[in-house]
Image (cartoon, rainbow, N blue to C red):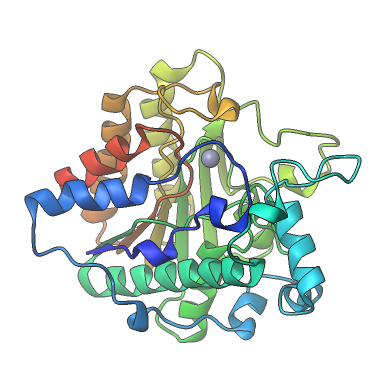
Length: 324
Ligand SMILES: [Zn+2]
């Protein structure tokens, strides 16, 4: 099942946020798939599961969650930090509140809808074996705050909510976004029931890396860094990493695949330049993961994560056409 609703897309310009890359990839993927299958429908807004403060507490510290649900100034500060809208001197950067048509309360509501969609997507995968949400994948959000354009961690919230409801016990997170899934690693570092795999650029994240003791450096269970020029080894390293999951960790009741398209050589975000996979390599990547999970009868739920610029939609579309 493909889950999509345009009201779950965060349209930055509506909030006065001036991030130059136009993000219409999810809609483009949906439209391309609908050409082949006219019966494809938007996921009904009223069916998106409501995500509560208690749900966020499954993955995040009470201080942070209280600020998100606190005064407008507190919420605004969290969002400005997460989306990197204030520079070192405290001035607005890429942010012009005068141009905002909506306030950040609405942006937070859209983020919560995204979490609800990731949760619905996982529930659908548990029923049918495969499901893809055209959104989500906020893997940089840490227990104590949002970062790297990820306000809350929809992946961990979803898994822990399903565990709380006794629908799953164990889970794998297979993260193939160009950037390391550092938030997911940090939140689950002491949680043996959620096993994390991240295959990412060896250098380049975190952008302002300081001490290796920073939470951004907390390892995943299986951590594979791809160095500049190592693209030719990417697929074999992926297979090795998946085998490591299979050999050393308990079988998962559910896998969430953080399916970033930003390792694509045509990606337009500067910080993804250190990993340049071809369109063919990315299709092969997605097929390898799909078949790996399918042959083991592990339900698979996908989220989009990163993927920037005019061609990102092609990567998601080619895989979803293969699956259908
Ligand atoms: Zn990314």
